[in-house]
Figure 1: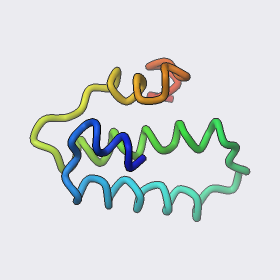
Figure 2: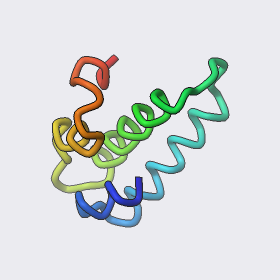
Figure 3: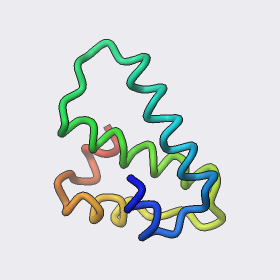
Length: 78
């Protein structure tokens, strides 16, 4: 996630919020989190934090690209 934050030029507040959201999800989740799901949750957290803190929201396709297109837009929205 730090690499994604650097390549998309997140401000430090967005990076902190991304980790905070990820941490809250892990604490509240009742389902086991697999590595595949963990990456998806991470990019969704990054998208949400960029929507909240950035003046220009990073498009969804850039977040998907950072995962080597392991997911599609629908998986990210669901």
